[in-house]
Image (cartoon, rainbow, N blue to C red):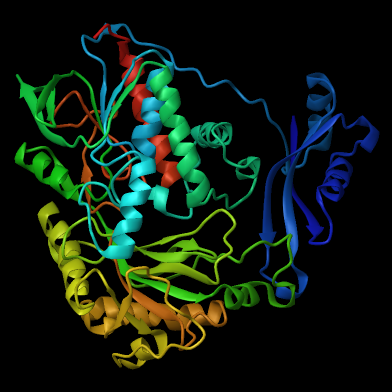
Length: 532
């Protein structure tokens, strides 16, 4: 297939126009094109009066020789010949006495488990939370009644934290495994458009069914999944992993894929007790900001707001000042702000939207980068910093998992007020007027203010006085990294394979899934499937 990139059309023109222009760019007649595919599509709204669609178009001319000749004759950098290769993983020869164990069934553990199961390793997966069907009911009860289950919640359970999100699949990594992950999501029920949209998303509603389908395939291939089963201990002998303890039972194992997620603070404490090598890594803290989706659409698209070719407006904004940054993260068009606590007497917020993104409000994390300067150089310091903010937000909200909230006008002026206008808060457990400007250390508050004013110049209406801030957002990424070597194993305990976002090697659904595949490949490349 020949891929022609950078093809532009107007928003009133569809894919057939892009194919015509791609053929002209290639220098072939339309009649020679035997097949055409969307490889990638995006919206260029930098000039609101002249918004365009940008396409990468795949053309098939009937034979590889014809396609190669056409590319050679064209000699343009925007034209390439693509030859997709099958995803093959060669097996190692070292025997495995016991099947691999995976701790955690979020995107990293899920894709590690899927690949291991397909290759005949029959993995045992331990998930501290419940299956997605029960998890949804438990989470909705928490939102409705304030009854928190510290093992099954927005952070823990089948599918990981991403199950209650926008299901966003954007990533900055350029890894060929990304295409495999997208194909698998489509195979399990995601819309085909995620393979070519520049900003693909699945939505929490579709993602729940996809997660269940992946589980069913792993089980059909001989894998086992134990829900409500937390990893309690890691057992060692002669400096190497020999087993794990979970739900009161000891399980002998030579390979443990540790994919526990960024909120598994009790697991991090266990690893530090075992004297495994963990280091502090930077992360970010802040709030959720809510606007009317219509305000965001107008700010991005002007008079074209609402056009079906453009979809819901999305933004990603950043501002750096010295060695600190303010930025938006995990933007949820047409979504809601959700209670996302996993510890008692603490408030954590996150964002979520369904595939249709048809809610009245848009929200995103508005956060500031923090590091050892803000909390110290030990992993326990980083976790304590997060926890202190979450507990302070709980007190500020008055208990019952209500969240402190403040309108942007009050935050900028330093007034503890919630003067609601056009924007109604969507946080399900309810909000309490509060001074979020007093919640954070001064350097973070000031950077949040700077970010608001800077982003308003980039996206008109971002700092509207009646936009609502809800706190606190602390789970942007893991506060620690579990050190691992080139072979994927923990440097301080062979046999343990730190994996995904909780281990500090991913950020978001896509990169976590890719890291799960990468670690599974490391296991497969060394071992052959065992009999245990």
